[in-house]
Amino acid sequence: MTNPLAAGMELSRKAPPVALVVFGASGDLTSRKLLPALAALSRRRQLTDAFAVVGVARSDMDDQGFRKLAAEAVPDAGPEWEELVKGFRYVQGDYGHPDTFDRLHAVLDEVDESRGTSGNRVFYLATVPEQFGVVAAALDEHGLARLAPGHFGRLVIEKPFGRDPESAAALDATIHAAFDEDSIYRIDHYLGKETVQNVLALRFANAIFEPVWNRQYVDHIQVTVAESLGVGHRGGFYETAGALRDIVQNHVMQVLGITLMEPPATVDAHGIRDEKVKLLKAIEIMDEDQVVTSSVRGQYDAGWVEGEPVIGYRQEEGVAPDSTTDTYVAMRLAVDNWRWAGVPIFIRTGKRLPKRVTEVAMSFEKVPHLPFASALTRDLDANSLVVRIQPDEGVTVGFGAKVPGSEFRVRTVSMDFAYGAAFIEESPDAYERLLLDAMVGDPTLFIRSDEVEQSWKVVAPVLSAWEAGDVPVSRYEAGSWGPRQADRLIEAGGRRWRRP
Image 1: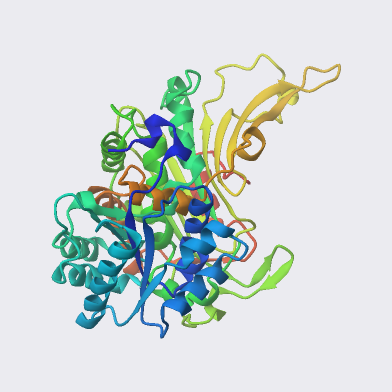
Image 2: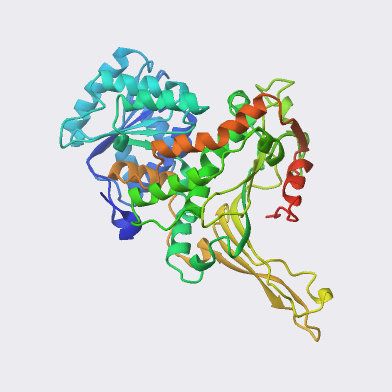
């Protein structure tokens, strides 16, 4: 199995001969993320000549129409992309109709002959979640899922993977009836981000960090996933999801797993994913009373964001006027293991917050004794380490330093590492990395079945209590950092939220 994290030869990796079949080829995800990622891989010469894209969707379009869509999605991509697009194929049809898959089978046979894709397939489900099981089952029925020895067929699935533990388990059973677990690649684009992966390097390649990465030195941890945008035209979808399902169950749990896990025995798919699962299993499952005291659900009202007036969530397109859907979540979690026992983990995510930012911040214990007068250290905070995941990828260390002058005044200063300033290499987009990994066959940065199951176990009691009305919806003004209840959640222990 290819192991780029250990090998460290990113740009030497190339996709093998393969046909990438994109279901939902006419949709927003394909145009906005998948096609630009493929164009970048082509530009970096990480796709061979024995490569093809076959789009499948309901939209009335032919091969030329799909090629035009691909060209317009990535204008000025260069001659490599223009040449590649000439071989794109398109199958129009309903995802549940046998004729669609009969035509797909025929097109793939033609692609094998004309492009030399060797019978290898990666099926990418960029459809609405309701079609995931339908497509997987149809691929199996038409002999496209389990291929002959020497060939591979892999299934890449976008989130959300279910909407509760029961639906996730049912979807898992349907997909496993068609594909082996080793051939299922559940994608979370957060894991494709350079900074998330850099947590591994930060911890395990530096003697100064790993020794303090535990309860003896860390006072608490904050995970922030903030968005300045509202739901836009996704109001109908958001009404069925909410921030807890949309962000916490997947993105936040994955970031926590990478950040807090034990050192893996091997830096490969098995070692890393095994340790992530162990960490997720160590997160304490809340009971009903804990949900009430340790979680906050919020929803944005009208306000101002980045100097512009914005409407409230209930005024958004497709949203019920009396909606109780959460657009903001704050929670206090606990990890019951040797490394993190007693260290509170605070997470928050929300829409229509002041800025777009994702970060993990560790706040360290204060020194046992300050030999300076309190008036001289009023601007001194606890040491901190902040991993900035987006948009300004990097790491910041906060520590105390003397302020120039005759007084011995001490305040917190920052030492900053920024990817853009430190490396001349261009960081690949998350989808570039993950698409290449799926084609190469490296599942390290994808989510395993037991990870999905355990993530749902963590959030299930919260969902249940919220749906029962045990935790009321708190309102917050758009452009603020969330409802006052979230401040009280963290301030109860004498701490406060960071202001990124």
